[in-house]
Image (tube, rainbow, N blue to C red):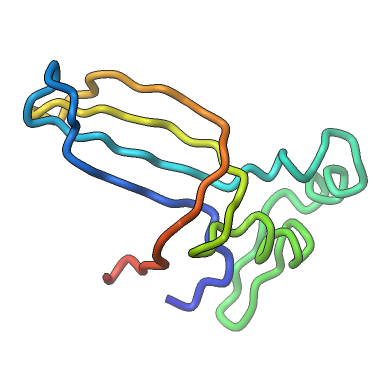
Length: 116
């Protein structure tokens, strides 16, 4: 609930495809950091040195500068953001019917917590 970076998003709706009756269309998206950080540039080298963000009880030590980790690479509601995602179509039995990966621009509509 106290997260400052929102790097993933989910969406679900009944699948409108008549070939998948009772199925679901799911979208899972993550922030596209590579849209802003190019291989070999200073940010990439520093991120490689850090490896990942570190979460402590009272603070976070981000892998990327705060402007990216909590800003441009954060899938905040009502803001367009670069993302990588996958459309997944699940049949009525919970089996994957098909999938399609994509790179795109998304606009989240809500910030939810796991408890919600």
